[in-house]
Length: 355
Image 1 (tube, one colour):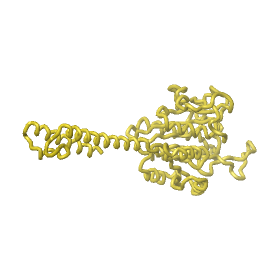
Image 2: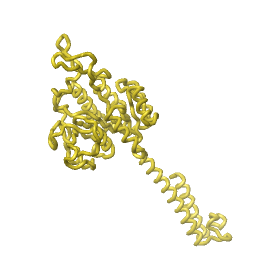
Image 3: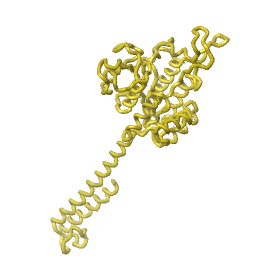
Image 4: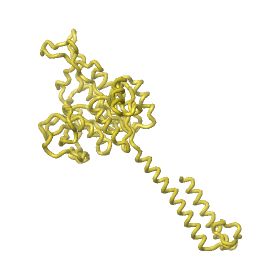
């Protein structure tokens, strides 16, 4: 469009120059652009009309180019959602799918069964890919297959499950383990591989967990065993998560060429209740100010993660979120104001421990 505008402008300048030459007696009417002629004679009125038409053509071409740029700028953002078959990840994935003018999400799931379940529920098959985030080569290939990625939402997590037939002799309760991937593999290496696979300029939003400031948090005990030689292995999910978060922050700060930005969300205890019905309380470092509640609906967590992609203020921030019981406080709808209430505070990673 700029090229054609230049051509029209050059033609206009050429005609104007011819007019000047004609007025100075240096040109004959035959050398002047025909549209400005009448019976072989150059007229002032036709000159004005011709010049006006040329200018209008240039304005139209540039306006069309500006509109094309606006369409390009407002194109849906390509967002990869890992853990899209899980509970929180799926809620986020579906929220984005419901906003096609704003987001163009691609969900990564670990197994064919997870993909089949999403497709059967009505999600387009093309919007779901089978990618094991603990497989670095497969993950890198899947990310590189995308022409453009604006953001990555990490919703993967090791999931503790009761181990069939195993009872803890000290408590008499079933033992828990991580049969689908332990915390070191999923929450540390899996997240690291995802971060490493991000193209330049990616905004990374992480769904993590509160409790990271306390090394003795009960969540760290899931899957942890004492070996015959007295050493301890397995478990420590919050320590592995925290290590991945610190790696992401380090990559954002130290590797300027990658231009990574991040939002790290630490939700309280996740509950399967309706979102959009509660006041969300934001804080840092596992503080309990604002409400005695230690939980938050998964749907509200998904909403906060989505809003982190809408507001630049969420870039390079880390915080905790919980929710008041239904009926207490004012339902959170202004997510920009929610973050502003935190002012400049971020989580302090000198607290707690990592593996």
